Length: 333
Ligand SMILES: Nc1ncnc2c1ncn2[C@@H]1O[C@H](COP(=O)(O)OP(=O)(O)OP(=O)(O)O)[C@@H](O)[C@H]1O
Ligand SMILES: [Mg+2]
Picture 1 (cartoon, rainbow, N blue to C red):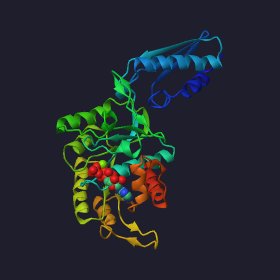
Picture 2: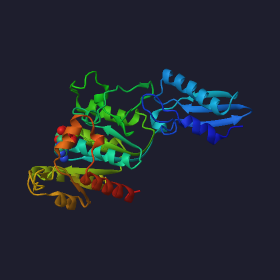
Picture 3: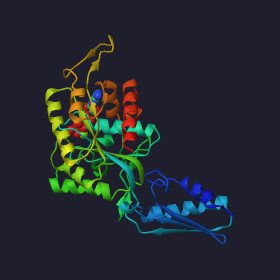
């Protein structure tokens, strides 16, 4: 007689098409019952359309058959919504007051850092009018789903991503929507995407302190915020506004990342402070939070982002940031 463990191990080797994670990782595996030479597997159907259900049924039958020849195998699907199965441990929003300081990049790098440490990670791209996450990860596939929800797209490292860009016919199409529609889309990304079990979901916010960031703060269970700034005078001034917004809404600030802190001249190794003297510590002090990193302007990084290969990035500065990020995230556990 096969055991529960053997059956669940066999089932968990199957990766759900479209998202490439197991039923257990997606939190869809409800139960396995073994009795009288019969195995009954119950699976939640959140975001799983009829075609994928059939695939799962066939694959489960084949996988169990292999370890228990001649046993009768039934797979039953029960109705569920993504909100009923999603189990996201921590939601971290990346914000800044100003545009173009590297929020999306820091969101991507934070996800890469934790995925490399073996955590299950997702990115919700809440920048509806200027989405940039899919390009950074080289994603072009359209998500699939069902009446009840939609499956995220998965990166090489296994990071789940949902972005409006993945849904558009052409990635260059402009999204011209008004505030309430944008807020609705962000809410849907949280409620109707099958994120499954995640250690961390990073939310890439659009610039500013207007509608969309407020929607995210109010409709998603954001646990903490990472603030991104650059050394520019104006940037750090507007960043202080973001700090004050996070404080007003009562979200703890996990840390501050100063991006584009300096440029290292390859020939001499000399550091040029292109945007002026570093103000990272000042901003961190204003936020009463640690300074997580001072990342340089790195042409290699920009090139990797353009090529959709951000996951290949590796430098000592990035490694140091990964360690700091892991430290502060564990502190708040
Ligand atoms: N440290 C860096 N080194 C090199 N290029 C960088 C760095 N940080 C950001 N960039 C590049 O600068 C551009 C802007 O970065 P990014 O899109 O992350 O900013 P953002 O704050 O999300 O902008 P927006 O406010 O428009 O959403 C991107 O092309 C990115 O690749
Ligand atoms: Mg951005």
